[in-house]
Image 1: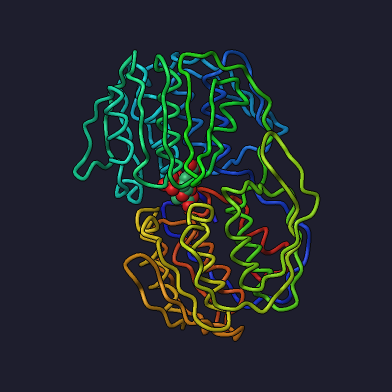
Image 2 (image 1 turned 30 degrees about the vertical axis):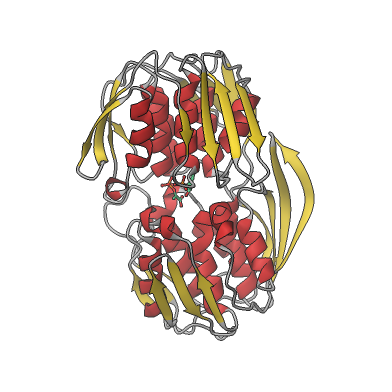
Length: 446
Ligand SMILES: O=C(O)C1=C[C@@H](OP(=O)(O)O)[C@@H](O)[C@H](O)C1
Ligand SMILES: C=C(OP(=O)(O)O)C(=O)O
C-alpha cells in the first residue's frame, strides 16, 4: 500500500487463525493535530513524542509551517516546534491543501479567524463535500469573512479579523471540531470567549490549552452541560507532549480480537479519555471480554493497556448518548454487530452522514455486499447478526475515500468464508499508517 500511488490499491482480507500478540497503535489523531497547532502558537520550543505521522496530521504540520512555525522531526521520531506566539501567524504564500482532513480544516479556520490574514483551503473529493457552515457561522460572528463554494464547502477562502470579537456561543451540534475552532479563534481575541456545550464531546483542546498555560475554565452544570470560558491574548508556554495511542485506531484490532475465535491480543498505551471510550463500553455491554490494565495518566490524558479476548457477542440497541464518545468507531462497531447474536439497532447517528463518506449509507451498502441483512434508517442502521457464523464475504467494497470504512471491512474479511476485498486501501494512510502490517503481526493473513 503506497499513500502516494495515484491508482486505487485494492486488497483482500481472508479468514484469520486466532490472533495473538502485544501491539501498540499509532498516536492519537485528535491530540496530534492539537499538539502541532498549540506548539506553533507558543513562545519557545515544544517537543512532541508519539505524534501520529498520518497524512491528516502531516497536512496540519505543513499548514503551520506555511504560516511561520518552525517544525522539525528528529531521526528518533521526536518532533520539535518553535512557535510564533499567539497572534503571530503569517499569511501563507499559497493555498493550504487539507487533503482528506476535516479536523485540520475546521480547527485551522478557527486559528486563522483571529489573524488579519487571507487563506484559501482546498481538499480532496471527500473533504470538498463536507459542510463547513458549522464553523463559518460562529467564526463570522467573531469577524471573519468567507467566500466558499456552494453549500459552504471547500475550496473556500477566508479573511480573519484582528482584533476579533470574542464570542458567547451555544453549540448547535455535538462537535469537538466546532468547539475547538471557536476556542482557537478565542486565543487571539480580546476578553472572554464562552462556549456552552450541552452534549459533551472530546475535551483534548481544553486539556491541552490548560497545559500550555491558557486561562481556560470548565464548569459542569447539573444536567451535564459544560460551560467553557477562555481568556484571550494570553501567552502560551512551550510544552513537552506525549501523545497516547489512538483509541479510534485501537478499535480495529480490538474488534478483530473479539471476533476471531480463540484470539487474545494486548494493545498497550491506548488513550482512555472518557470522552473517547464509548466503544469499550458498547463492546462490553455486548459481552466483549476487554480488560484494562496499568491505568495511568500520560501528558494530561488517561491511558491504559487493553487485553482483549475472543467473545460471543450479543446484539444491542445502544443509547444514542454514547455517540460523541465513539463517533468514529461506529463503522467497526457495525462489523461487531454483524457477527453478534441477534439484531442490533443503532439510532441518533445523523452526524455519520457528514464524515469522510456518508458512513450510514456506505456501511449499509458494504454490509449487504458481504451477506449481512441490514436496514438503513435516516439516523442509523438495523443489523441482523450472524451469531458468530462467518460472513459470506465478497466485494469489492466501495470505501469512498473513507479510511474507517476500508479498515472496518478489512476486519470483516478476517471472519469471512470467502474473504472481503476492499476497493482502495490508500485512505488508511490518513490515520493509521502500518494498519495492514499490524494485522499481519497478530497472525492475520493480510
Ligand atoms: O475534534 C476532533 O479531533 C474530531 C472530532 C470529531 O468530529 P466532529 O467534531 O465533527 O464530531 C471526529 O469525528 C474527528 O475524527 C476528530
Ligand atoms: C471523521 C474523521 O476525521 P476528520 O473529520 O478529521 O476528517 C475520522 O477520522 O473518522
